[in-house]
Image (cartoon, rainbow, N blue to C red; front, side, top):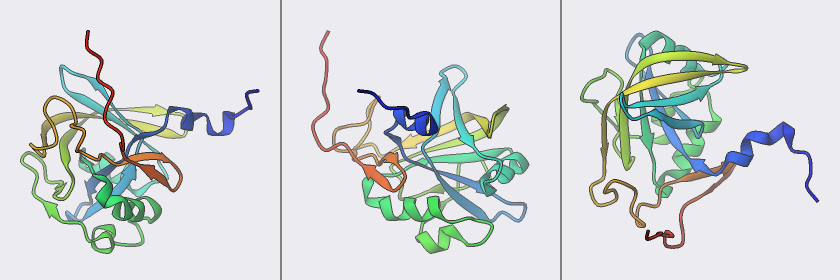
Length: 181
């Protein structure tokens, strides 16, 4: 028997890779938001989309600065990701509380998170209002990754942090299933 889950329909699409979105205010102070609602939307040009509620501080920062970085954490950062996902940058300095190390980006004023295993620098390409969220589409100006963990796709050793929903996270624990055709 199947049950009605319309109120949480979006979790049918989870688990998803957990990400940390960095953005800056007018003074250059960095804010970090945890998000799983991210996806590539074009290869040429290289575009990614992040879905953010207008209630979130990050929403106004991206609208103002027209840029953001998308940072991919490993499972070792789960506590830091949770801190960034459960507090507001309007009230606290999440970079300080989570003890994250920022590194200058190559093409943006917004930094990347050094301890993340992958980073993307994104210039705002467009926005689409979508109900109670806004889809921010970023052109990926640079993408870099730990060379031991990625060769055209994540290696089995990457331990990419996966968000299941709410306060539940996981990471690949079994070897990947590789199909040979």
